[in-house]
Image 1: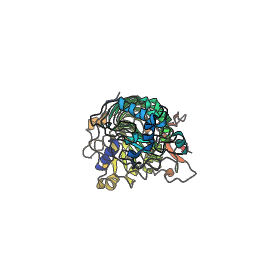
Image 2: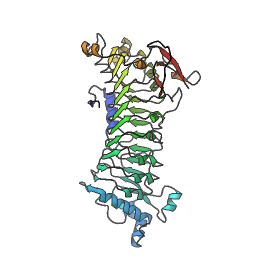
Image 3: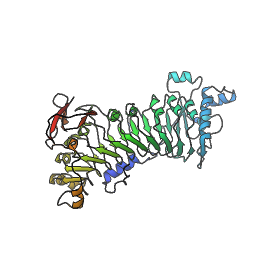
Image 4: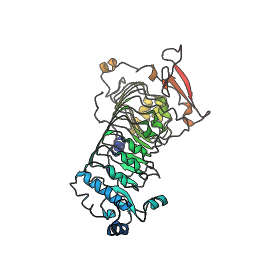
Amino acid sequence: MARRRPPPFHARVAAAVFLLLLLTPAPTSQLGLGAAIAAWIHGSPPAPPSPSTDDDTATASSSGAPASSPRSQEYAALQALKAAVTEDPNGALSSWQGANVCAYKGVYCSAPPDGAAAAAAGALSTVVAGIDLNRANLRGTLPDAMSLLAHLTFLHLNSNRLGGAVPDTLRDLQYLTELDLSNNLFSGPFPSSTLLIPSLVYLDLRFNAFSGEVPPEVFAKELDAVFLNDNQFEGQIPDTLWGSPATVITLANNHFTGAVPAAYEFGAGGGGRVREVLFLNNNLTGCVPEALGFLPSIEVLDLSYNALSGHVPGTLSCLSGIEVLNLAHNQLTGELPDLLCDLRRITNLSVSFNFFSGISQRCDRQLGSRGVFDFVGNCVPGRDMQRPQPECDEFPGEGGLSCLHIPGARPAGCDGGGGGGVTIGVGVGVGVGGLPFGLPGAAAGGVVTVTVP
């Protein structure tokens, strides 16, 4: 296993601020992740109906509601959660007493989600719709009885000390749209039960101890945000990654290996909502895929702190909306394509601590003067703050024919013209769509042209 590398010390302010916001489990952030997600994620929810006047609870309590009634099931679930908490130093659950569950601190009640839910809720005019116990410093586990909260729409438990496995019974929460378990002590394999929650659109598992492989179904689910960073996930990143409808995907600070998934299903003018993808600080190898340049909406792409090799593809110059492109701390070689320096919206372009042998004056003029270009720690002759020459001489080189790219004009497919496909120059031996690709008799180092429909 490759030795873990420290976080970057050289990053520019713009990238540092962004990564700090995204990779830190900020408890009161609002991410603006689309209409499908509630206006708030980690902070206080919209004002619910006043819990202190819950006539349904009072009636159920005074009439001795049967154990199977909706309100008594909610009561049983919340009391099971309270019993599963072994430490509550701040007294967050001290109000969780009595039958009036809507008066419990951190529990939010509202009308049932829809007509069918109202029928299922019996005579209740309000149901437990959400739980927000962020930053409560609770130690314990999640009980199976959470599934009794049949109308729960959000469950926010970030920044606690909850551990163990995520219960499989969460799959029964058919109205749950937001699940935030970040910054806890959960462990075990990826909680696949979360993928069976039919209404889920926001999943945050950051800063836990989940391990094993990430199932391909994660990126096939209709999620608007996928936060998996700072766990112990390993294995290859599923090829389904680029089919995800999510706008933000964070995979940083895990133990992923293998290649960066190619994005060949995205042609010019193709789909794809992803705006921000973080691969940093894993053990990824191989090339930077050419087809990453055809992701139509990408704004932040961070591949730093891996072991990627070969040349940087000129297709990245197609990323007209890119603001942060971080390729630092890899094993990239060759000359940096001039076309990357034409990216107009770029606020941070870092290629530092690679083995680049050439960076043009054009990049200095267009980006260096703006303070957004970082190329220290390379092998560029005559430049300051480069690697020692013996270190550059000892580096093995180009990383194989599959990573060679021929510099040239901006790819024709960038603007979406010409028959709806993307023409990509592919080095001999490149795998396209997971299949080996080669041409008999092709000269060493030759390049073939592949049209991607």
